[in-house]
Image (tube, rainbow, N blue to C red; front, side):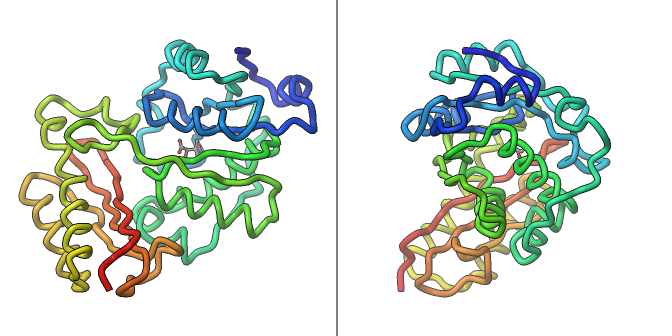
Length: 279
Ligand code: PAF
């Protein structure tokens, strides 16, 4: 496996016709990322993973500076997972001059949920993802369902801009207690780590209630948010939405329950798809 920093070097290493498969990451890799690498390997070669902590998608009070950076370990994990190239640009490789052109995703998808609490987040994500796609020129790219809204926003950007890349989705990987793997889990202290699985548990209960026939979305959202708050979480949102476009839920259509909440200083997100709700 080769580690490459510069776009020109990456382009020289990759043959233009190769069906490259790409996994963009911000590093501090865990089993969830490695499962995306394995999906990529099933759909193309060479497999390229990027490691780049993208300043553009962090707000002024976000954790850009303290975001965990574990480069050597990440490179080892990627080599073992069957990756062929790691693209690890420095900020000056990817942003040689201040970025003034941005991708503004569809507001209906990007300004709700995460976008409401992290203004500019999806502009930063789409801008870097487009730039990474231009550098890697992948045939397929794999994104995790853990960042459900990001997956939909990127898919929509690809369709809108007719980008020649197929977006694949990888399932969320969870710890035994249900906690979704996330690079930010390392921030949790032991007490918070014991509490953290509640986020997936409340979403699972929403899923069970909907599968049992409940359509009182507001009551389900409020009950989940109240349970989290009662256990010390500061809740940004718990929301039931349509899988296809994150629009308001309708009985019988595939749904997703999404949540974001803070435990101490750590903001966690999670979601559960409810693909076949009771009619
Ligand atoms: O999901 C992430 O890790 C990031 O948002 C991504 C897609 C690598 C863009 O920086």
